[in-house]
Length: 164
Image (cartoon, rainbow, N blue to C red):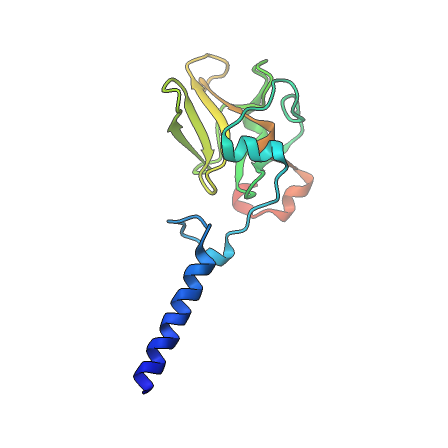
């Protein structure tokens, strides 16, 4: 009888855990109940989740020159430092480097470009282009403003030291 009670209890717990895990990201190293994402506007959802693109020269960050960092709008993962931002005259924020380990490069569906996504949440950021000669690093991360949140140098004191 005790064995039957134990098995029923275990099955109930496993069933409840499976129900709780539905709709979450699989293969994440974070415990399922700690994965929380920020609320997004319809435009931000289109860009981050459906790989849409902001219209050029419409975002609030393409010409921003303030000191700070840019984080993922969906998960707050630090992505780019303002020191790596440059004006490429393309209409989107451009960076010639990312914070180490923050961005993942994948082949784009069109087969010609390299898509960049947030390594933490998989949100679409934009595309990376190589060999254009804009900077000494010869790299341009062309990023959608809808994918980013700017954190000023003044507000950076609230962020972990490793990303300052």
